[in-house]
Length: 394
Ligand SMILES: [Zn+2]
Image (tube, protein in one colour):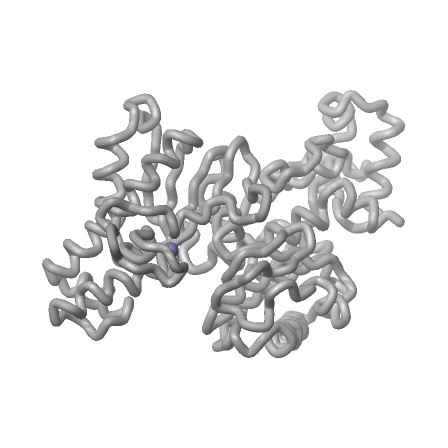
């Protein structure tokens, strides 16, 4: 089970309505709820009844031991509703159905081409979601929200991609509106790195309020969780570290139009291109991974240098946000310790001792499921927020 109780991560009001307390799945009595909230017991009783009638909480525990008296403890009923989660990449996608605890009930991965445009890709997503629900004896009526991750910048408040470089036809497309034509539920959209950060935190570091998730793949980007909240910034591109200049990149052209960008030196394709110029590999990121796994010294050194390049930029991030965890994920993270070792080398050498005294730099623990878990958390958080629960009551 994934800890999705930390509603504040996504910027919730923190008002902690009764249900927000019960979202962690731990059973509580009415007396405990009254004591924690400071609300009158009569108010608690009304709210408990309301949540019970929605099926969102159910009695647990002590019915037997109290000799037939009704149970006095209540907890989240994770199977009361479900969400659809979609991780849409450039060339492949994962769709999952999860319960309200973020546990994956069913999952399907398939090839897509994001450049086919939003109508084609989103229709496929909806059809696949329906098929998954049917396979598990569920229907669209069981779904309370949909979370979608896209491989480009997204204005989270509207769910519209903004100038996404690898997604022709998607710019400003109203993703929630299109999906709601098929499934009449709230649709939450964010960029892939942000949802990976959410998934990584929930899966691997549930007690951590300050986490930086770094994706190293075709591109490089970071998802920032600070003070327990996902930081999106003014335009939703907070954490877009791929196009910060690094000294070693002097003069090297980047696809963004600038020179010397981190991404032009340390992304999967950049490492592959540099190795191919020396006659190693076929110029693809997967050939780099294969070379490293076979112990090729040149490939290992190239990956370690990419880690150092990344470390240069992350050192500045450490100074700025003082994270306690830096998790490195994305397809290049599977090369293992060599990339991380380069990152550590630079950050530990350059940061102030206090900033690194309790800093963990590690490979992503959520792995390939980080994105789809994060998309599910995005949807669950919205659906179970005080506003979401209010919508259900109405
Ligand atoms: Zn660039």
